[in-house]
Image 1 (cartoon, rainbow, N blue to C red):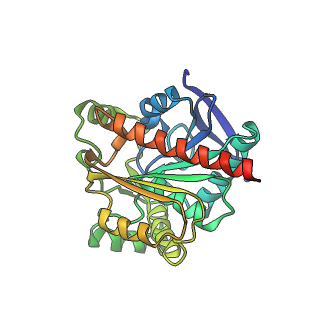
Image 2: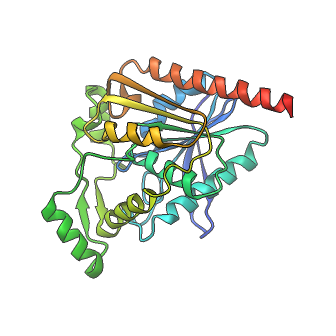
Length: 284
């Protein structure tokens, strides 16, 4: 199905943008990473759409197709409100269909935070290289300046400490992201402060997830701390959880030249959940 574009209205009146690929089956809603946007998801979404799924690639407030205050936020809970508003919008447009929330990198952290803190509309959680725990960070000097600036000039910007090679080894996609004019390369001091606050507040409750969870890790990942993510996964209380590592893949796994194993694993996982949901409906 051809990619289309749309918008939904948030509770504070903002219109936020999304890409959509329509299908006959259940829905996958994709949350992009800290620098990226829904455009990075497009080829991967098209492939999943060939398996029948309807997909929405949501551009985060201040990112991608959305205008205004790029790379800035004063309260990370606004992002969670936006996710909730989007899922309610999609639910109303797709009566009777299941919704799987998919997040990559920092979008994975947002997805986990939403599921843990809100009455989740989503029926399942799919995490690709989730930055629940990360290796990258601002250096000590820059972090100290950012903390001071937060109180004096919170909108001052700092470069995101991620190098292109950390995303992928695929030269075709490296060229694509280097030319992406919508790529977010800096964040405000306020945004960096909210990242730290979100990570701190999530820590005591991040096991409170009661939906099926699929965690997919890249073997070559300089951004995510895979060992700590595996420990976190082990603490999850949900009765339905699956973890899989792709040893030869890099951080943005959809950028692999052959992403078929990833697509097949996600499709099979959802197929199993759909059979389980159907079985439960019959019993009820």
